[in-house]
Length: 231
Ligand SMILES: [Zn+2]
Image 1: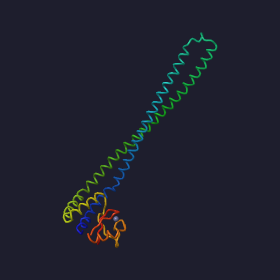
Image 2: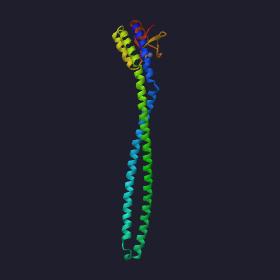
Image 3: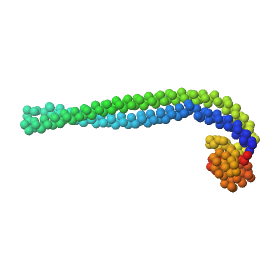
């Protein structure tokens, strides 16, 4: 038990370094940038879909325009002198209607073109946001790597010392300790608080656990999964 506590004391130094690295502002920034990059990527995809729709609209409008224009041309090419008064009136009314249709279609086309321009501008904006985020991320990543590299010798030194201390700890206990440690549980072993409380999460321990603690010297907290020992 004492040997495991000794091990944990030193392991605490390693844990502090790991904490320092994981709480690095560069790491926080890198996470933010990843979110920004993802968002702008989603936006780009949305804009692509929007553009596709507008382009389909445009081709639809153009088609309708062509049909109306053809009708109008045919009518203008028709032999007016051969028409009766009634036919002429009808032709005139139709001409007016087609002209109005063409006018509406022209306006729709213009609006669609404006939409295309807006989508393109938004797309460029999203792309720039993505590129900026990616560039900044690369810088952050480099800083994180530098920080990690700078602390590596110290970590390695501690790891070597831990390897020595490990030899004095019961292997099964050591293996369990390492498993908990890998699950980010730290400290792994905590003292019993008062008569029957976990020294970490303050959970009240059942009587049967306390008698097992007296018998074996160590138990596991059901709540926070830490080892509990009696001082
Ligand atoms: Zn606990």
